Length: 146
Figure (cartoon, rainbow, N blue to C red):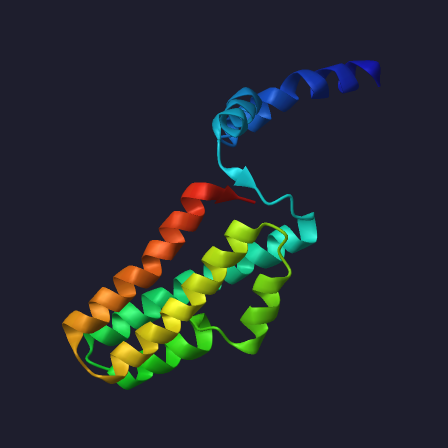
């Protein structure tokens, strides 16, 4: 039994490296990450990651709809999936970090502006609004981490 335990302890780092995870590299990455942690609980962190992935999927859908000239459908996605809905107001309001909260509100407000721009069926204006909305994503991910 002792030999098995010793062997398991010796092989654990090898297994982690084989899976592409270096414990030292992972720790160094976190130490070099100068972004502000939101200090979320594991459950809230997972919930936030799911929301951000949904935002990314909605953005991709909007781009696809734009490429097909389906401005009305893209507008509906912008308003319902990215806009400042009551659910998103509540979500943003739960965070303690004021800068994160402001960026969240700005992102969702810009998504509503994107939805309005898409209704005009003007490709240039729509792309400018999409650029503004995704700019908030970039700003937030540059400044904050989960």
